[in-house]
Image (cartoon, rainbow, N blue to C red):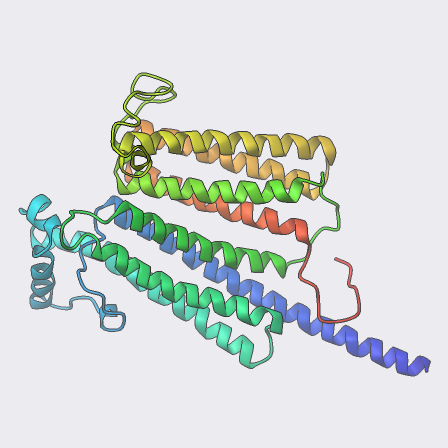
Amino acid sequence: MAATNFTSEQAILKEVGRQDRNRRAIRLWLACVLLVLFGLVLVGGATRLTNSGLSITQWQPIHGVIPPLNAQEWQDEFELYKRIPQFQILNKEMTVDEFKGIFWWEWAHRLLARAIGVIFGVPLLFFVLTGRVERKLWLPLAGIFLLGGLQGAIGWWMVSSGLEARTDVSQYRLATHLVTACLIFAACMWFMRALSPHSNEPPPTRYSAKLAGLIAIMALFQIYLGALVAGLDAGMSYNTWPLMDGAIVPDGLLVQSPGWINFFENPKTVQFVHRLGAYALFVVVAFNMIVSLRAAPQTTHARRSVVLFLLVLIQAILGITTLLLQVPLHLALAHQAGALIVFGFAIANWRGFYGELPRQTSIVVGN
């Protein structure tokens, strides 16, 4: 009986070791996906900031991988761009060489978007077919892949809004596109963290996990507001801080009718709400840090709360500096990168309160 139990325990420990190796491989894969997603969002930000997003006026998922290769192909692509309002109203004097400057940003963004599909889809198929993905993860990971496909359609839906009557894309569709990218990023971060070893320390308070979730949601909402700011070029005006248009609460926030539309289409109102969201997030994160340090000093949770506060502080400084300097490209991209870092860390911090994903074995393994 003892020999049988020993053999059974060996088999289970061997299975646990196999799961550990598989989980490490999946975490490494998801980390690579997150890195490429991070780059994709930054290139997308540069595409918006350089007004390059309408330079490619057709959606060709396969053929579009190949850029123009000779002078005639460049001219053909430029002729397509000449048909849209952005050229006819804003860029009438643009040359083919100047067109290339905006074309490459949009082409790089679309290429990275295609690449992320391969980087996610091919390893996922390999992991599933070779039994390296636990069954309970099949549907969530497949769901992320399908959301990525939907994101491609949302991207074209966004671009198409600027091809007929507008000189830029709809801020509503831009915000939808960015938020969907962030949801994909969050899902990858969530499952990577779920498969990572966790501390066995209890939460500082019984509300800590809920507060972490609130912070993550607030960070995502700030990204949504930032997309509206970018879509309306709202950061190009009212470049003072802490006052805005000479006041703490400026006039003219509700001049459009109906009143609710100001929160989406009035650049002053959108920027003001984005400021308020930043203040609120800063206060909640500071409160979270103070509570965690008082209730559970020297714990992993307390240390994470300090890191999160410092990230939000740096992001706030970047945002104010970007505003004061009237949105230079390098600072605007740093601010966008900071937003994604804050959001990603907030998601990882939230998931950290729920422990490692349970294993498919009866043995409890200490971490």
